[in-house]
Length: 82
Image 1 (tube, rainbow, N blue to C red):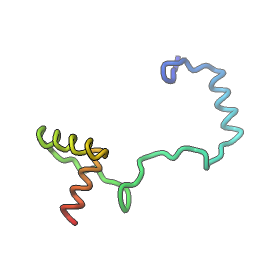
Image 2 (cartoon, rainbow, N blue to C red; image 1 turned 30 degrees about the vertical axis):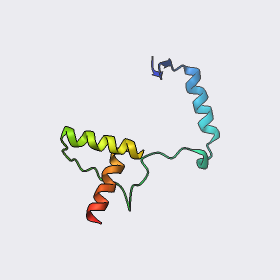
Image 3 (cartoon, rainbow, N blue to C red; image 1 turned 90 degrees about the vertical axis):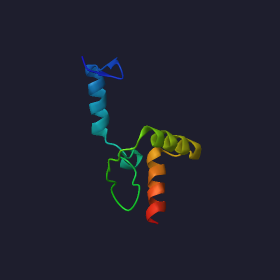
Image 4 (cartoon, helix red, strand yellow; image 1 turned 180 degrees about the vertical axis):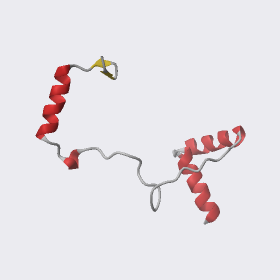
């Protein structure tokens, strides 16, 4: 039997979801999916090797600044190429 978050999915659940979908959804109410843009267009993943000491310093700084490590890295790169 299939489950969602550990709860079994019943035939009645499936019928209820089908009925709901057939009634239609307000597109404006639907949650947007995907990551939000981080710049001028779609983001590109760039793998970078960082030693443990630098990674720890990055994590500490990002936590102090209340930003993600990715945000901190982007800010550092913007400053470098600025």
